[in-house]
Amino acid sequence: MERMTVMLLSSAAFSAACRQLLFRVGARGCLHWQEFMNLPILTGLLLYIASTAMWIYVLAKESICQRLLIHCADVCSGIRRRDCLAG
Image (cartoon, rainbow, N blue to C red):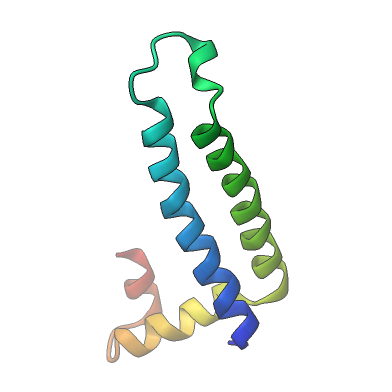
């Protein structure tokens, strides 16, 4: 996997964690829908858009399914791929 791909996947995962924290902070104490339009929640939404765009870019660029099958075969050595994928 290319270095850029790893960086994008890491950034997307990190931004997903950050946005959840921002949603939590922004939602604290809100009772009416207008109160949810605050800086932490709007920042979390921007992170959501950015991380989704990163995931889509990586999925379009890399053959992740094939890599997962290879990894699954390595992890489940001695077990057929079908059994590994089934659970």
